[in-house]
Image 1 (cartoon, helix red, strand yellow):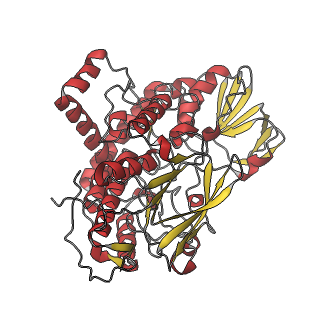
Image 2 (image 1 turned 120 degrees about the vertical axis):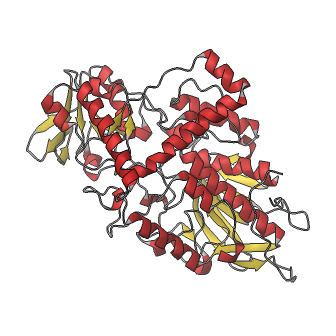
Image 3 (image 1 turned 45 degrees about the vertical axis):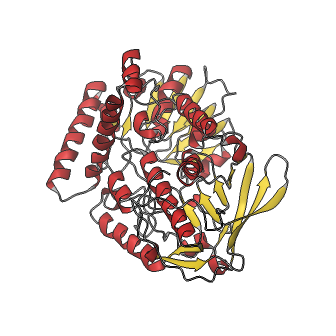
Length: 521
């Protein structure tokens, strides 16, 4: 295994900007320190605190629907999780504690927006134009390397018709804790993963709650029991126990990728088991036939995220709770009108309507080689290499970029695979005295062809209600395989698929070193 190079021959290291301090941004900063001993980086954070999704989503009942022991960083395990699926407060505290351990707070510019970034051909550097949202002060920041770690769950998707709602209204990621829901008539729009967590808590407070959902998710029992002190002791003091427990959950959940494919006997068996379990849970939980029919999903299992809950079904059967599956056609004042002509007034509207993925890479903010507006040139079809690097965007890494999302396992596994790949890339740059690396267009197109080929037999591109597809029927957000396969593809760095330029002033011939694997130094 090749040892990583941690500096150029003159002892210098690249200057780096990290945009975002959520799970991915913190992971980049920590691995720069752990693996490359690089501290010449700055983190730009729009919020007043770290945590990204886990700082923004403070709604009642907010929890991780991935097992906590597979969600934390592999290099910073937490043995003190209270439950298999940790609440938002615990995850945020874990991220804060990890950031403090690695002294990251001193590296973060809070309440600072990166307005745009431009590649300077002559200087072989990026210029980031930033603005402090608290003071209005603006400036430029010039660096060698940029990491985009803004995540895909940060821009709330607000249905256009609800912009005219006259009462208190907010998205699940913008929870307004100042509004008391007690004795209020509340509309909850959407049955996403967050909606499923919100609804039981709102149902306990509101005088009446109406849930608007065009279709229901497939639901599994949560079984979110508390860990005993004895189990926590074993996690802390018997390494094999924690390792086996984490590995079991990781690979068991990763096998759910079988749900997403057709035409194979093993996928058929896996899908039939999941159909049986979700149907039985619904049948045993909801005895009213009419309500049970409304709560039965009308699409193939796997084409949307399967959610976990223990109290959703019981909430939906309360006398103060209604479920409406008709299409919303108009929102006027405080009333919501459906396609059947019925109207209902509410005191509060809560939107669990997901997030805008396309808006995460807006035009006029990212100008690469030759001044090209990279996001605009993409249109609906992003061109990347494993959602991590992009042609025409030298020295730029994306964490959880296009076609690297997953819906069945721990997102942290994908993030760590991408981050570790970029550590290999930076090591190769310093080993070979390079100032520029830029993935070749043919490599990105080969990745895109792989994605398209694999999605031909994928549920996402064959389902009746294609939620994750663009207007041309392509899936631009998700990776097509398991987390393990994604890691396998990125376990080594191949310099031959990148265009390179030597450091300015360095006339020596550069010979690519052999592909390396990640090793802590």
